[in-house]
Length: 270
Picture 1 (cartoon, rainbow, N blue to C red):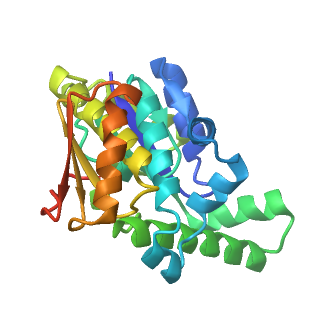
Picture 2: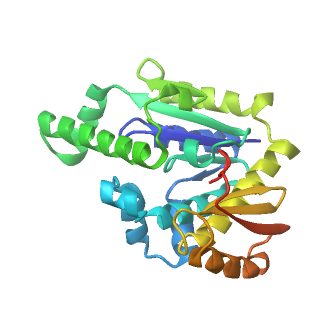
């Protein structure tokens, strides 16, 4: 019983691995479902949400927090969907968005550039040079997105529990590896690890509810005791305090919620 995240580039067979592993394990397979969930929960047009979270942020957007709300909405939707367990997720940055949950298995699927170029040529009807350029541009955009938002390089193998190279290993081999990992004791869901998942989901919901007031808000949850961290006392803090008065009624699982202005933000805050 686990949550499996599969990070993949274009034409790496990661989608195929995810779907076949989910089928074999009897798990639900998620990807675009998260976009639809976020769009419905937060009343944002799907196309606007897709563009906001997938396009590489510019320097101006990073400084202004232009898409922080969209990422918060996406994370809230993702954690709501996966906290029920038995999930294979092959969408946006699962290995980072679900960080800190012990029963999450983080997998990276890679493939040779030459194989990917051939698939791009066939799929798009372009020359080898054009296909190579398109794939390298896509890779760089994905890398810029992760680096700018999380300060993490998606090509860093240390971010994953294991990396599978689809060449000598086949898709079938990869599915075997993923399914075998899901059965290991260290990735089985325990009461303690489920509590971490529930707290992450709760903190994510609270942040999504507050991010329109302040993009710099950070949130933690420990057994439903929620702490909200923000800048020094001021108008935004007063607005946050007003908002949290209603959150206990709006969001299930909150035992207590407090705003801590000007406090040091814990490393596990989201």
